[in-house]
Amino acid sequence: MSSSIKLDQLNFPKASPQAAKVLAYLSNEDPDMNEVNNIIMQDPVLAGTLLRYANSPLYRRGGEISNVPAATRMIGIKNVRSAVVMTTLRATCPTESELTKTILQHSLGIATLCKLIAKKSCPAVADDLELLGLIHDIGMVVLACNVEDEYRALLIRARTENIAVDILEKMEFGFTHDQIAVRALHEFRLPKRHENVLTHFHQPADENEPDDELKKERAVLVLAHQLLFDMRGGDACTETLFESTDELMHTLNLDETALGVVREQAQAHFSDFTG
View 1: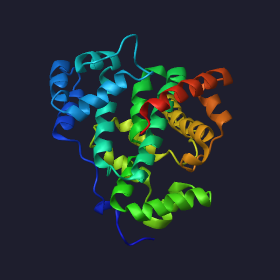
View 2 (view 1 turned 90 degrees about the horizontal axis):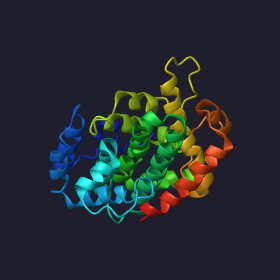
View 3 (view 1 turned 90 degrees about the vertical axis):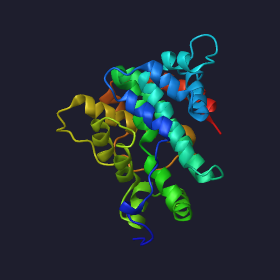
View 4 (view 1 turned 120 degrees about the horizontal axis):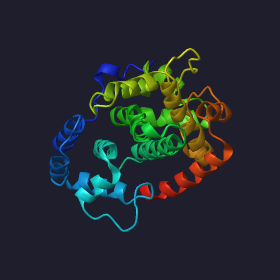
């Protein structure tokens, strides 16, 4: 095990004052969107990310969205939260680091696939699962920012030797990026059930789990990883996944036609958030 850093010594991403205010407002039962819009407009980076979301293929309906109030109306409260999280993650990463850029692109790909899969299988939580997909690998970002050289070497070894990233993390650090992500959920005020999904993500599915919706949410996240690896091959991170694509499709009641649509929609969206 590496002695260079321990879990409680890691520096975690912190939302900017404006982003923290937005997250606090959005955690209320009935947030004042006028106030949310005013806060976002005080942060040019946050406003720019929000407009990119609103003008992406997943959301845009018709003409270009060019202002913050129109963007928040278009994408909805939960997706405003996703934009805030994405802005925070980008701000956390060293701008010159190809490692963190690669991890963020992976997270964006998983988030997109989670939303598209959920729309077909459990549409009521599609926005929540997009956010879970976005933040599920925040632990990788944390490791890349704290021990960049060691973590770059670990990911290279994972690819060249075809070893799951989470297994190497446990060997090298004594903890995995999932454990870091669970800690980070509190910073972004995410639902407690997301913690349950992440805690069991790299474990076999619990056949006795009484919550069918929780089973589906976990299956969405796992299937998103299967699909991203199929679509990107060596560019995607290898992680411990127990179920096959067919098993996950059965859990989510999806057929090949639906999966084909998901792949096409995801591919169209990926190019919008590159770089």
